[in-house]
Length: 75
Image (cartoon, rainbow, N blue to C red; front, side, top):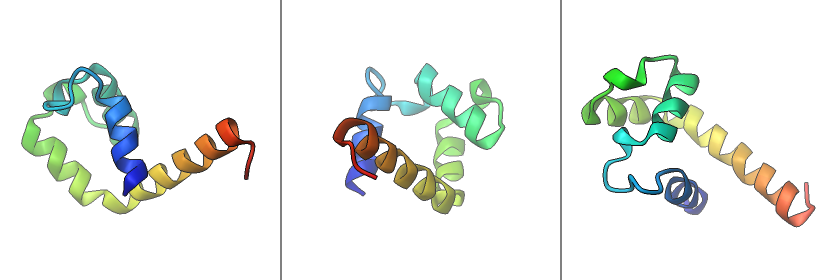
């Protein structure tokens, strides 16, 4: 959970209170879910996140492993 918040804090810079408007997060949503991000509403973003929470959890664990490997030399 801590890594999820850290990832969000970095990825939503400038859009932390309205992440559905972030160009970076919209791009990530398009590549991760295969949906047109420019058409996503706030409700649709949260619905996708909730429906895919297991996949997102796997992605965030992978991100944490990569960060640990690159910044701390572990793995």
